[in-house]
Image (cartoon, rainbow, N blue to C red; front, side, top):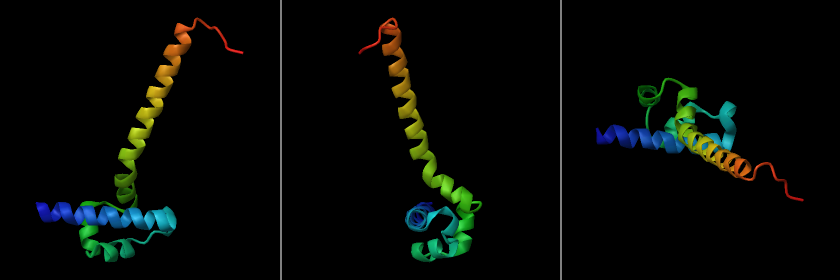
Length: 89
């Protein structure tokens, strides 16, 4: 089980670098695998396709960002409701 986790982490790290350097469209799954030191079969063991791999990288940071934005707007709404509509000049 530890080897699987290590392989997946290598793939994610390699993919993150590749996506950052090349963007999604130009990122190469073969290069991601080569840089991670694994076969393309290993990639497809963990991820359905390129989109699934990309989503695995961005899902948590995006969820965290949405949570922060939601918190910010909730705090703003609370402040506005407490001010009873008073506007500052």
